[in-house]
Length: 443
Image (tube, rainbow, N blue to C red; front, top):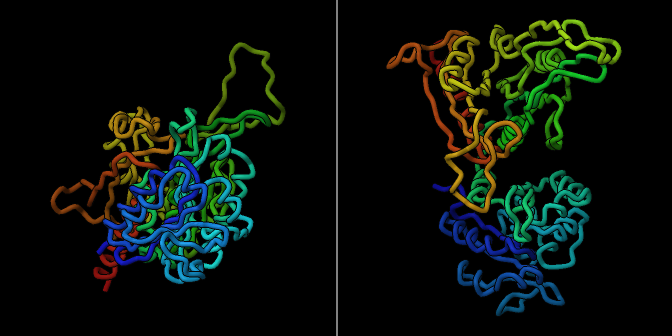
């Protein structure tokens, strides 16, 4: 049964050109078996009509008038309380900057904001606005406030906007919103488990000004941390330098160098069930860091580098080790390199992605949506996952193909937030299977 079957969903529609997408969201939710009610702000009615949503949902549409408690064809009062009690989830899509600001500050000046204040249902919002409005510090602060109040933020996406500009601020695609809502109703597949996740790059100092680094943004690791948190896990996120906002409701440790990350990881392993290493850890560090800025006095400069410890290999070699998931960002021989890393480092799972080329496969799926290069500094990725199974740290052979991974799965190009949810589901499944296999063989 679909997780949305028989669920009571309120869609809140605010003013914005993206309101037309809410019609498709309504249709898709009903097809998934949900019972849907629509609440529109006055501004929303300037973009789409209540009649459209009444026809799609099969129910009268609630909207605002002077007393904020009207319904198309019905003047019954106290609708905000009735809807608040009825709803299993409220999704505001699109969520305008104005409505986000109202909700962040607890205002209840229309039916939608009053309903949200009165409801204990799952609450989600899908921002949609001009890129400059989205980037404004007030908007960002308001979104953080909502997330801190246990709202789930869905998007926005990057792409061509109705104003003709290009940037972040597009409402998330309906399929992505639907996936997020489905996830809201899934029981926590990692409920009560302790996860340690590394993300981002590491910087190795050359002198007080310069460093050796890499192009990792941390996006994939942060998305996985949020997906694990939403799946019920107790998450510790250890991150190298990143411009990304720190996810809420998890333990966060900021580090800079590979050595700092190693120390943070090893000190976090007590009671850890699953370790996921998405960080792009520097393989080498400068042997002798200059205490003062190096001056440009010579035509050539040589740096002596020394190898950093392999953090994931250290974790995988522990006698009482967690379930260990590694990442392989490759530019060539992606599959073979990932398989070799899985075996060489004695991992339970490896997640491979090609960071060398743009996503040519998805170029024509939606001409309005920008789908940049997959991998580093992109909202998109494509993953190929391989896994094995262990008993007492010894890999179980693949009976059909000895020497090959026990299993594999490919995830097509999608937003990293969406891939993270799928990957966490797979990790939870394989962790449980591995644990069951271990218990059966040691009984």
